[in-house]
Image (cartoon, rainbow, N blue to C red; front, side, top):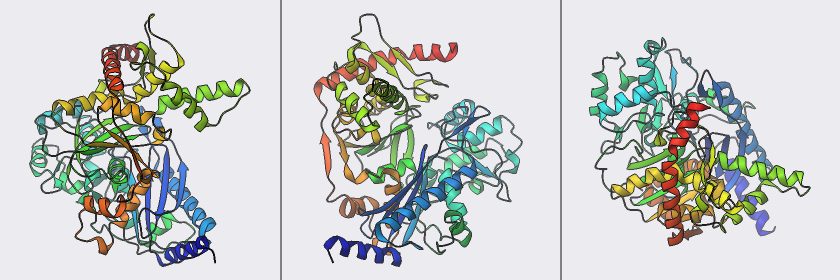
Amino acid sequence: MTPTDARDAAVAEAIRAGRTSLGIELGSTRIKACLVGENPTDVLAVGSHDWENRFEARLWTYSLDDVWSGLQAAYTDLVADVQARYGVTPDTFGAIGVSAMMHGYLAFDAAGGLLVPFRTWRNTNTGPAVAALTELFEVNIPHRWSIAHLYQAVLDAEPHVPRIDFFTTLAGYVHWRLTGRRVLGVGDASGMFPIDSQTRDYDADLLTRFAGLGTGLDLPVLLPEVLTAGTPAGDLTAEGAALLDPTGALRPGIPLCPPEGDAGTGMVATGAVAPRTGNVSAGTSIFAMVVLERPLQHAHHELDLVTTPAGDPVAMVHCNNGASELAAWAAMFARFAEAAGTPLDADAVYETLFREALTGDADAGGLVAYNHLAGEPIAGLDEGRPLFVRTPDSSFTLANAMRAQLYGVFGTLALGMRVLEDEGVALDRMFAHGGMFRTAGVAQRFLAGALGAPVAVGDTAAEGGPWGMAVLASYLAPARAGTDLATYLDREVFAAADVTVVDPDPADVTGFAAYLDRYRAGLAIEAAAVAAL
């Protein structure tokens, strides 16, 4: 037997015995599953399913039928990967964890029926509620938070409000259906209602202030129970097993860890859960998480105060628009290459365009790109209109155009990060993950210039959020009891990680600052485009 055969046989036995952890994440465009072994850095198999949100009745949503068909498809894909690699069919796991897009609004009646279609994080129709709650609580309440959606429904006198028995996030909903438990990891819960980092539970004073509004809603009863990482969060029921695996092979009784949001799993996947560390996750949206050493001095509309999965305070800069507009430009160039008779695959297109961007001017030659496909509260926009802007004397080259597009992905994020700088928040290192960082040394370098801080990219986060969720599931094991999350990640997950760190180039820092000045000034153009088109 060769060493590879011996390893595969050992892995097959571990899978049969359930010495594994399964992480599942429902992202904006893909549902992914990741299976890890007893060592959580050992990725054994993966599965995925593509899906898309819908814009219905002027709200972004996903149907619950799509949630379950997508979960089943991703799980089936993972099982097929296990079978192809190791010749076994898993029927149990050591632990399971579910994560999903944070925030949003899923409200149910006493019979468990959905009262209104799922309202996702992408919706920005909650302005009046945001203004009222931010003033009442004296902390920033973002448009996408669950409490903003609930209070907006109250202000709009929506008929479903008196019938609400329970409301939660997407991860909380899936976990509830799998286990029967109405619970939520503290990181995801911090996107529903403000958390007190001392008690690691909903802020009692702010719950009292909300009660004073006279809505008739008993918020502590309606909200899911808050749990920190490593706390048992229920077991897979027979009904839950059938929902995840319609073939009937999956056995009930598997423990689940607290469900988390994609921001929390991004922090875990990058090992950024200790003070003075942070991470940037770039996908359909882009957000930065910075773990705080001390409370902020002021409330800022650009910053959300959330927590790590362990309940420690975090400043979050969340932008609704990430790399989607960049992807649209790459697709256009891919079609040009095809039409010219020299077709390139997607990776080659990105590699070519990103490398070209490196040769551009540090300030992108006076070009400005706005990636706003959807509304962007940090930029003061209720809706988005992607724009590419130049003046007659701008240096309009391919290199500068692509540099402007890459800078544009980080533009709104940088506005929020400048607020953290003004608060005196220090950063030792930011860890970046997402598809745009696959071309080595380009987006990573530009982000370092945008943030003025070292940026790390590593192979441990290759599977992203679902791997981070699998790590949280593995943290549930009794052997990890008494070890705090930061120590567990540092010693058992990232100790031997292969990480590349890029320090900010002074020319990039100066060039991006000039770009951001133009970007900020040109937001009036964005607002005019929304009004005119």
